[in-house]
Length: 146
Image (cartoon, rainbow, N blue to C red; front, side):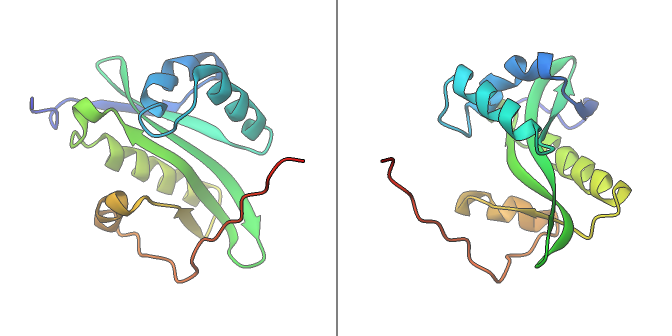
């Protein structure tokens, strides 16, 4: 693996026109085809969802989906829905840089916290970013279509 730690990263919000460029990276995390990814991202954007990209030498290597949320239980916070760095370049610092971007963004919006759901294999990464397991378990019930 090449040493990617010394290369500068550009972290910025993606415009909707750039979302197709994000798909190959997001596809490493989510089992969606490109049309469904774009449809869902557009729909979520109506509620404040944004995609943020990590670029190295002009190439998109990491993507984070985030949205502002306000609930009675948690107050105003930022929720990270998606975070993925291209498998070929993981360990480059792009994931850490995306997380730092999210924290800075949340602070700028006067939010109290950043929340996310983590796959078990990603928990150590988030713990290194000073995230802690939340005491409330996430639960779901799948509904069948009529």
